[in-house]
Length: 199
Image 1 (cartoon, rainbow, N blue to C red):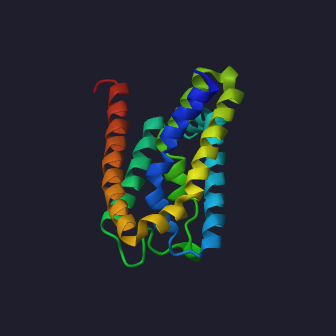
Image 2: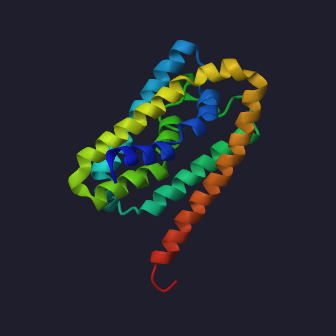
């Protein structure tokens, strides 16, 4: 796999276009300048997490006696709850009461940008070809930069589409998130059952 093909694969997994409605919905209560600061912070946190999983994820999970399917199931549950709130919004907003009135790490950095699929993908790259960690790091940086550029342009879409279109898109994305989250949980359970003896 070349650096560019790995970057494209990671870009598709990070799914910035699919994350736009969620980001806009979560950041909507904040003033525009603060939105950009929070977005930059969350993207940097996501990059650090993905780099950490690329370089040391396998060893960290082994130390905590966790399996990759546990990460997938946990991420699926979080995404399921977010999807339900997008379909049936509450008056207090998507994430309820947030400390300081803004999201921190969950759900923007994790699991939306640095989700279980992204973590698993970079861990797989790092464990399959550990001699090419520098190449995979560059591929991750390219995918992350493209993702950041799209998400920073998200407010323009809000102005172009308007509130009604954005609300419809948010509900649709909520339904898709619920479906994706259920699939993530089923995949995690399926993988777990396959590797268990006497099942």
